[in-house]
Amino acid sequence: MNNLIVQTKDLSFSFGRQHTLQQVNMEVPEGSIYGFLGPNGAGKTTTLRLLLGLLKNQQGEIRLFGKPFASNRLETLRQIGSLIEQPSLYAHLTARENLHIYTLTYGVKTERIEEALAMVGLEKTGSKKAKQFSLGMKQRLSIAVALLHQPRLLILDEPTNGLDPNGIIETRELIKRLNTEFGVTILVSSHILAEVERMATHVGIIHKGKFLFQGPLARLQQLQTRKSLLQLQTGDDEAALQVLGKQFKVERQNGHLLLPFHSKQETAMINRALTAHNIDVYCLQPQQQDLEQLFIELTSN
Amino acid sequence: MNFITATHSELLKTKRTASFWLSVAGAALIPALFFVAYVSKSETMSVAMKANPWVSHFSTGWKVMSPLLFPMYIILICTLVTHIEFRNNTWKQVFAAPIPIGTIYLSKFVAIHLMIILCFVLFNVFMLLSGMGINLIRPDFTFLNRAVDWRFMFQLNVKMYVSILGISGLMYWAALRFKNFIAPLGIGLALLTVSLIALSYKWEYVALLPFAQPHLTLESAGKSGPFLQAAAVNSLLSCVAFTLLGWADLRFRKERG
Image (cartoon, rainbow over all chains, first blue to last red; front, side, top):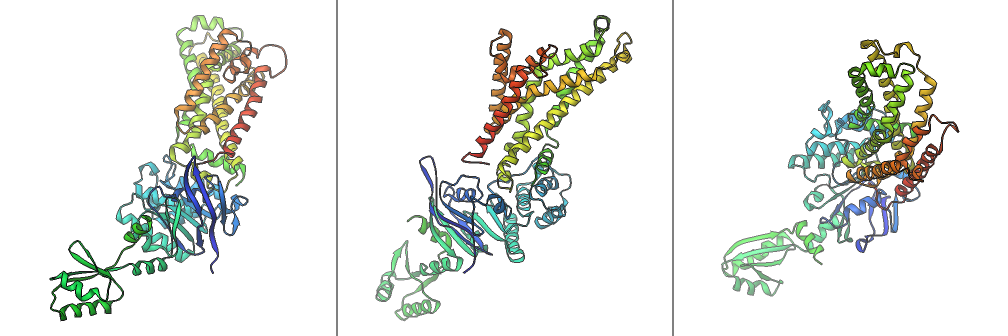
């Protein structure tokens, strides 16, 4: 069992009467890229703000690096880099000046400024002020701020929000590289499932303040296959239903048939059975249920 | 991170912001206006100031600054410096950094006071320059023939600095409290107006109002008695009280950044 870098126990939080989080038990193993998924307003940012101490913990326990956060605030924060919501940069300062402030804050050498800038590809911004940066550049500079002091844990809240496709890919590659090359544990939130699927090793799904799923990505994908369907279009659906109905649970939907998908071999067998009965097969397609659909299923209760 | 580094980083944040130029402009306004006034009314002015030009020059300068301009400057500088964080959405980055809350709070306050001290120093420098400058183009003035009373000047500066401490503590707290720039500004201007009215009516408790304390301190500066008189002492005490309250407010806040 891996060490847990982040562990919350029955974490609950409410703004007034509104319960934003209910008994969240988050577990982020060391060395993982933990994709924190949920629609907007699900409680992702609230959870991440609690982890950073930006919100006062009301109920439950937060342990970071194996120690209670409340009594180890400074020591814990020294090992965390963060980017919460929109970029937070001093707009009137250049990229280097922004990083210079944080070298003082974290007590790191000024050489790290160039290293961090190179890592996010902003070495050549010179005297340009942060306010003149594009959103993508701002986001990258914020990531440079977050990794300036070589943290063990990086908390990124929707880091690809508002980026163009190129920026999204670059950010994703950077996250992966930090994880594999430098062994940084990364907790990254997103409301886009495909994105998380492309980089995460572990996934936590939150909806209306409650966790719906937590575990390795592979387990989520298993869950996914189990719910996959095979789509079928034939010349005579009635006849096809009769042929297949004995063996499978077939459903009719929008002019085609749906049956559970198990394997490729079975798909071929179905085709043979239908053609043997002189039924024309127009389309026979495993409908890989993507994470998106699974997500909707999970969240719609 | 130690306190000096924290203050250094606070000062770096003010680079290229309006706060530096506000301090320069705030200090230069009155010396520049005086210079113009002396040029245009040199005959009468030079006679009136003949005996003790520096003392009358500085006293009049502070008289104009203390009831209105200095308090206004303190309102603006406290709000401007503090709101660098609000404007840039950087509070969350500050509070997620490994710095004790007390250090965050005090280092910014000290950075503000370094700006205020800069303004004080520049005000004196500009006053000296305007006095010497006018004498160069209008020889009837006696600035260059009379020694500057450094002791008087220094003591007056210390007293005036102490007298604005209360305002600074109050305004810093207000600026930290409200995300909207207008709120601390409005509070400051409202309290300043109330104090000006209280001063003109000579309200019996006027010395308790932070915004009245600079003017009262200047009024009592020439009188006999202790070095710091009631208004200045109140300013000092209220600064301590406001600073503690502001810190507690930040420390026990439910949501930061």
